[in-house]
Image (cartoon, rainbow, N blue to C red):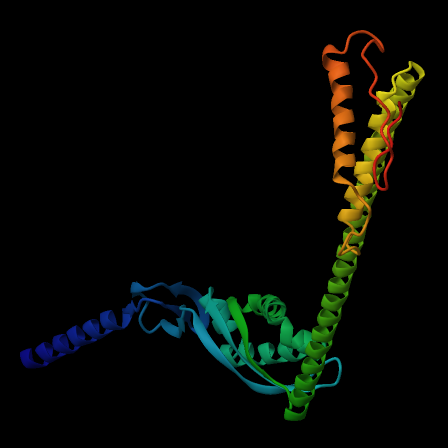
Length: 329
């Protein structure tokens, strides 16, 4: 009898230990467990130690709460301009509500994958091929916005959706390459023509400036030359006036000076002429010296010492010879 009672107590003890063990649940970090009572969701166990009622409660699902990555397989997409391309991508998502992810949708990853592929076709099918290849950031943002909004009732947050590869057909790639080459050749020709045009403009502008500066220089030179000629003519006129006044006053030496000066200038012009190699004239050196002597007498009368007016004795008239400067007495 005692032995039967001992066995019964042992069995009760074992059942109690099993019951307690069934009511203790250890939840791993990064996971949430849903608890069901008689098949109905009651609560969620966070990571750590959790307790449930044995034989009444049970664990419904063990939901991974960490961010996960989902490969989007390659699919064909027809663009707005009827070009067919192969597109694949990758999606990142995180479960925020374990209960919704468990009970609001069946096969969560499959649902996210299908809605992502569908929206890839929708968004990329509304764009031209050129936009498709050049605006990946806009495509990613549009797809992410749509998929995230659709998956919100499932307790899921879509963090990123990235398009990995966009592969047009080979013949289309060749056509695009030829188009790009033609466009670059066109731009190169335009730039070359623009450079030639700019060079011609600058050259013409330089020639214009050179002509203007040359004309300005010639104008200034002509002005200076005319001013010099005017001053020389004025000086000559003043000299002639002075000689005329001297002659009118009875000073005969002024006439000798005037004639001798012109005579010497004529000899200088003949001697320095580039077309004259030999000077053959009946020139008498004594006559030239006599003319210079006449100039000296004028200087003496003017600066020193000739007395007043015509008080000095007049020289005797000289006999005129060939090539001599005539003197007036």
